[in-house]
Amino acid sequence: MTTKRLGLIMNGITGRMGLNQHLIRSIVAIREQGGVQLANGDRIMPDPILVGRDAEKVASLAKRYGIERHTTDLDRALADKNDTVFFDAATTQARPSLLTKAINAGKHVYCEKPIATNLEEAVAVVKLANAKGLKHGTVQDKLFLPGLKKLAFLRDSGFFGRM
Image (cartoon, rainbow, N blue to C red):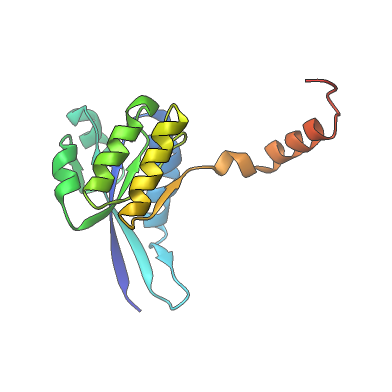
């Protein structure tokens, strides 16, 4: 059994969603549990580099959560071949260009929703990732929460009347 490092560039982690949902509740929690165990007994351990515009804020978060790597230089982070995944939770308006930059740097991408503010930009990002043979995904966790599924059922069954 071996532990495999997963180099992960985390952009936009100083915002509410990036910090709480993705850094603290996901990556930090996974690291505290010793990584993700695979069926063969190996483990995947995320090794994030925190990226943000405010050097002090990013350094403070890195220190607080025991993360060794942080920077304000996204281009340098994207150039590191040891980091293979780019995660973005920054502003939606900037997301298509950030994802495109990461894909062009050869990174698999995962991001907060939505991918873009319009269909054309979103489709362009997905097509680029597919053309480069890279994996891509978007957070959709809220859509499948039991409470939201029940609300959708009530809406679809006409419980609320005409909406």
